[in-house]
Amino acid sequence: MTRITIGPFNRVEGDLEVRLDVDDRCVTRAEVTAPLYRGFEQILEGRPPLDALVLAPRICGICSVSQSVAAAAALRHAMGVEEAPNGLLATNIAHAAENAADHLTHFYIFFMPDFARESYASHSWHEGARERFAATRGSAARDALPARARLLETMGIIAGKWPHSLAFQPGGTTRAIDLGERVRLLSIVTAFRVFLERTVFADTLENVLSIATAAELDRWRDGRVGDFARFLRLADALSLSDLGKGPGLLMSYGAYHGVDDGLFPRGIFGPRGVVEPLPLTQISEDVSHAWMRDSSADPAHSNTVPDPDKEGAYSWCKAPRLSGQPIEVGAIARQTVAGQALIADLVATDGTNVRNRVIARLIETARIALAIEDWTRALRLSEPFCVHSQEIPDGDYVGLVEAARGSLGHWMAVRRGKIERYQIIAPTTWNFSPRDSFGVAGPLEQALVGTDVGEAGARSVAVQHVVRSFDPCMVCTAH
Image 1 (cartoon, rainbow, N blue to C red):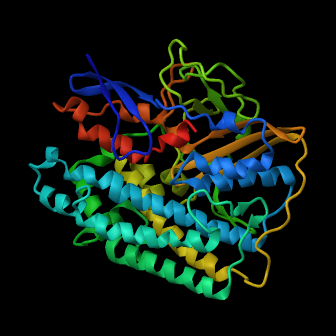
Image 2 (cartoon, helix red, strand yellow):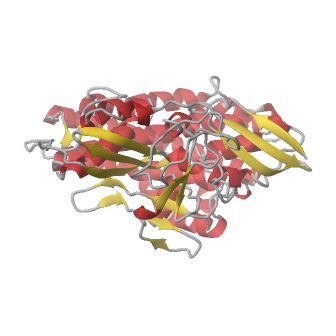
């Protein structure tokens, strides 16, 4: 048996290292390390609660709206107020635009360039993949980056700037949208739809979302020229559905809430193959293998105290658990819990794997593109976008949202007008967690076991596929 260390990773948000035990070319054990500690939870302690709206978005520069929305949700819980309907819609538009932009970044900039590697040069499809997806030189980035930039113009209209906007408040959004700006929003989302239909799918979004089974997806793919179909052919040629199997438990906090209901519901999906209610009180954090001192396992009552010399630890990432079990989060979890027909069929057939995670992100992108159109048209421009904030009594509060990469939670304790404790469990904290006190590995650690690294060892592209399929954001993981 040999041990190899891979890291730092390129095309990953933040710092990441992976240690693998390899026997006969196959990974038998994995340890995933978040080597950078940032300490935002400690920064927030002792500050007025509303400071969370300023500081929490600065945890990350690519999913700052998600952090803003989670902080605002915790404060809204504390104040006992409801968002103005227009503010709720505007928040959904901005949040969905950020998440869709993240999905595009993952697909075109982080994930697909691996197929242009020289290790695949012997395959008949390699030259085409290199011309289309090679990092910095491929034609795909020249198509995708302008589309992503145009989509993010929604932030200027709704929030004034991106990232780190102050527009997202407990009672809604701070800036009213006028008729001309709604026309601009519709123009942006129409251009985004055109990009998806011409470049990504080479079909209408409605046709793509009507695909209900794996067999229908295979028939749809044949002869199509869009980048989604290109990915499907590459994934099948490399058997990516057999790579990176997850733990089998999926969770969603629910996303894009409406006045009456949300676009994607809350719940968990487990081995019984059904969606069940989410037991929020069963969320815990284990620090047995994290460089942290022991504290309460309940995030509502725990503290973050670094212990860089802790014996047996190997990551700044804590180990979140639901009812004691590791949970996979992300687009594949959201779409499975939401009952999206194609994703549900793929998960029922093959579980979570490299291929299915990427498919779920692109299917979700199509769904939220249509939703943004509906939310924009639903704005009632003569009505308020924000209600007044209220005093915050002492207590324990939580804000739960879905970022692009999965379930994001902010737990806040307020005492005498100040933040006493602030705990954040980010999506990559769930997916990239270390082992817990029972020795149970986190989702990525489990997904890497069984990977054939071949003769490449630390340069194995298969390992890169598995890691990138989770779309890690390590800066959020260690806050």
